[in-house]
Image (tube, one colour):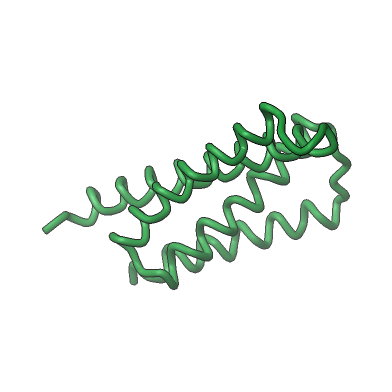
Length: 116
């Protein structure tokens, strides 16, 4: 049986890897949009999504869906918003940043609420 710390480290690593891959896929798809049906950005985005799905399946094999899904999706929304703002120079309003802060609080409540 895994100890709490080993489980937490594994959970954190797999979740962060899934989020990073999801965010990278979103960035590639955005960069490839409007450039024709097939281009390297779109193909890269599809490949990265495939990798993300593989890692997410590992997450689902080890952790509750009721925790894994909202944490992965929530962190992906946060990371994608940050990438859109800083890498793609998209405007994110103060109200949207407030929403991101609320999402982070919700993610912590979901992830750490399971521990108690």
